[in-house]
Amino acid sequence: MRNEPENYMNSMPSPDVPTSISAMGELAIAGPIALAALDAWPARVCVIDDRGRLLIANRAWRELLRQCARESRERSGTDGGCPNGPWSVPCWPRETAQAVDQAVRDILAGRRESYSCEYDCRLGSSEDWRRFAMQVLPLAAAGARMLIMSHDDVTEQRLAEAEHKTLERRMK
Image (cartoon, rainbow, N blue to C red; front, side, top):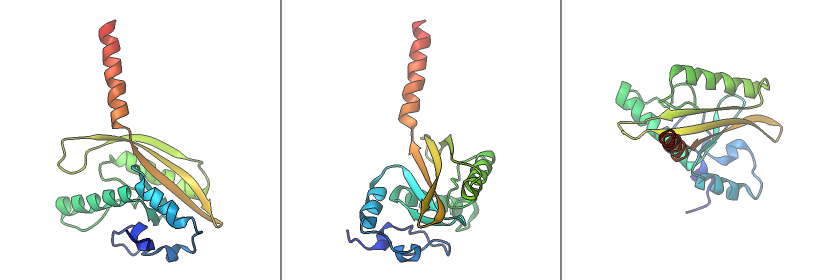
């Protein structure tokens, strides 16, 4: 693998997504290492600027965006990505999408410190659902207001908790 900046950026075509790290400004020497570490992280992680544009997306996030685009083509015949912005997930109910959209706006405006929620997601024709814990936090760098968003797969943990509760009920 070459250490070119384009290897770490969102590969989805969009006029709002930078195509190189130079579009975001100079990174410190640790930049390529930090980006490679972010790419290796299993959670879906992205950085969004103060205008709601996706700046950095790790490999897991880029795969989600590709899946969003595929599903959008299959459902509606369009090449659109996620409906409410680069932070949106197509399996969210409308209420969740609206709550996340408002939280993103509030965090970027400084009216809110953070946001978190859990949601179930079944993408595509998969019979397998997953449970995700999402967290949105402000991120300040070089005087710019941004946010970082992560979606951690907590399915196994929630299934184990449910199994534990079931066993407790049986033991009573």
